Length: 462
Ligand code: TRP
Image (cartoon, rainbow, N blue to C red; front, side, top):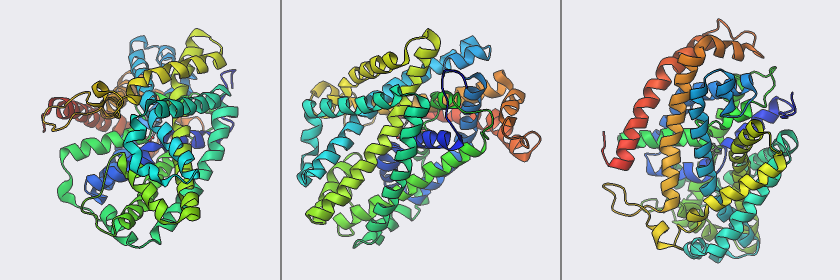
């Protein structure tokens, strides 16, 4: 590997990519999206999106990265398609936007970890005061950005890979223990039923848009993060197998996170699931009350583990988001990596200020925009989340599939995949993947992108 650095082995890449994928998206967002969108029916649509639409795009991203050994923008230059750099540029813009608000929510998670350790269960009742408090917000998000920058500044193998190899197994253990514990609580079964019994009548078009957005977001797809990580993968690795493991791990974590969350929620409401809180409050308002009811010691242990878990999950994701612009700047402008990391991180922290102000501190950012047909205003943080999540990422996925199938061409994709996977050429996997990347992904992602924009921002429901 060149001086750009690289993952030291197959598990390094899988840990880093699964670390990027598993984050607030799977642990905080997924459970309540499931709860709001028809239970198991939503899970089915989500899983279908992951395997049918996201898997081919993921393989294409990793293949483009590994082939070119370049960042999300430079990769397209190396392949000889300068105008397709637009995919990378769009990706870097999405990455900066996502990191700017993601870091704020990560700061809340870490702040909660500290408060629970102090035994301050009351924080659940003061969620809106804390998020409206700019000192609290800026302190914790600055701290979180520091940790992210520290890991990224240490480089790909000594920083990102090493950190994720420690944090991911720890995260799995904490998650499984917490889920096992949650399932023993009173009313746990009511929560599980609410979570997993499918209601197919709830599968409407907007549910499908949400499932697709969630699939892209949770797999860190559509913005070149995996082109960047792919550029650090060795030519001996099998880049069909690793994405399968990454997707299975992400879907698995999301499913288990629901098995932990809903028993907690059901326990809190004594089994009454008709009026449960959703959105950010699910974690930040409800859970401290649950932990409090366990008594001081057990509450601090279980609650502390929970918010530590959430912080770990978020940190391995923010690291991947920061690596995308950093790799671009270092590759293209030959800058010093450490300096680039710190400057970029601090600039993105500043871009996050409107998001920090949007949970009560500033009226302008708190009631930022009212979508057509909506009864309430949407705050700035949720607005940029919607823009990045439901529109930029599927658009990125659409462009990547069109580029791969019709410009870079399928035989080049096959040749790259065959490195490290000698039985790929001529296999049924190749036939299916080529079919998906040429026809299924461009058509469905293209249509869904247009429909989502019409629906979200123009209030037109089709
Ligand atoms: N996948 C992460 C989550 O679910 C978020 C994330 C990290 C991400 N890197 C990304 C999303 C790149 C899109 C693109 O929390």
